[in-house]
Length: 211
Image (cartoon, rainbow, N blue to C red; front, side, top):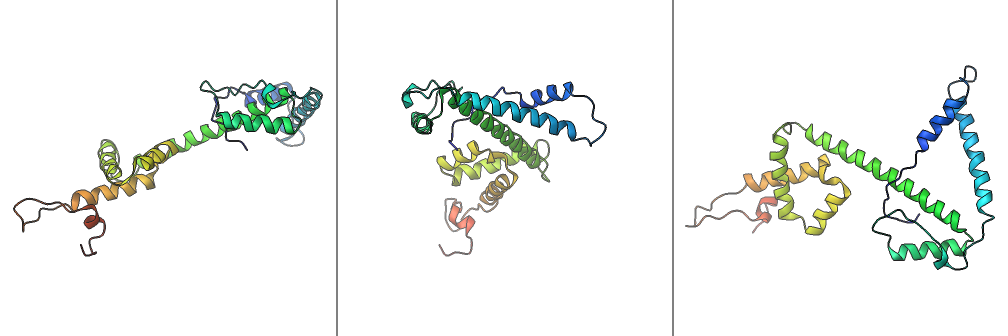
């Protein structure tokens, strides 16, 4: 499947199903799922008829002739756009059907994005529920974890954690928090010297290794 960027989707598939269900008589015999099966059959039949009509529409004369709306204010990657146009033209896809494929893909991506947003929210709830992380301790402990992340993670890793949604994952947060605590608790002043010296990161993480 092509990796189009996520676009907001306003398709109301659930609403359409609900409207169909409202028009059907109340089912008494056959179980609770019979209305759903009938509604699914009607939708399938309609989709098949629509697909048959679309196959009768001429295919654009060249890949560049497709008029596509990806629904993205910032546009789409030119390489992705070019590959899809070439694929559609080589497989005899009409302009209308090509647009429907784009819309369908966007609806899938939007649903997947929403599911991921829900998951990241659940991760944050789990982190806030950790023992010792309630209330104001959440911000304090996050400060310790972020200190460790800044000390160890490259900018690329920090960006990947943020963009993937793992910035609130309890296991990721606990890992950096524990490292941050080691950075604080294992610091010391070398009494053999006039000037104070803190342990290096290597000495903290691997205390049994020779320096």
